[in-house]
Length: 240
Image (cartoon, rainbow, N blue to C red):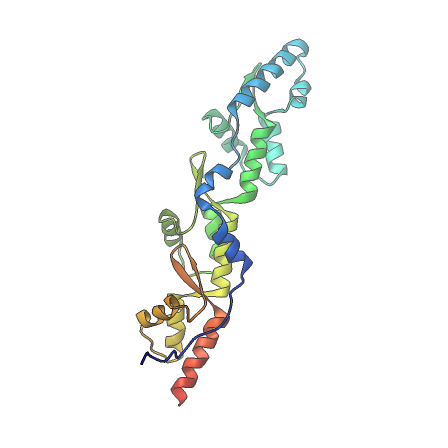
């Protein structure tokens, strides 16, 4: 005779935040990043240079979609990109931001600036991502957070030599922290209530589908309300 199924929670999980994350193809993340087309920059630059030679009017350059350094800086700041004037100039000089020289000034295409804004709207720097996450998980230090990125547990992408974390990923992980228990956290909760369960035995319950959970990047997450049901069953069993 087989062993009696002591615990089996019958619940269909429906969490759009987690399910959207799981459906997203993170392997194609880099392809979704807007890229500046150097060819377009050169083509527009030639047209703008001709306009400038004929008129000598810098306003005509702005009309053709080109910004000088000060205008580019102002445009980025107006759209929420907090970069210093010096840092912006340095990235342009190093070729990290495509630009063209017309007359004595260097100009940046509006399309390039819009791409920078799009990155700002959809990605965090590693430090920004950690600062958001640590509000919900003060136990994870910065080095451990970076380690999870390096191992691929948290998706990331390199843009212009810097690593960025999708805001969607950070939002999902903060949601998981608020709403779910990891296996380790579940075991800690059992111990707090004086319940001693073998971790491997508990994980087998998950493997056999007895306790509804999600698996995200190799880690299993149990909804806190589901775990409360498991905990209450275990407490009742120990009273009899």
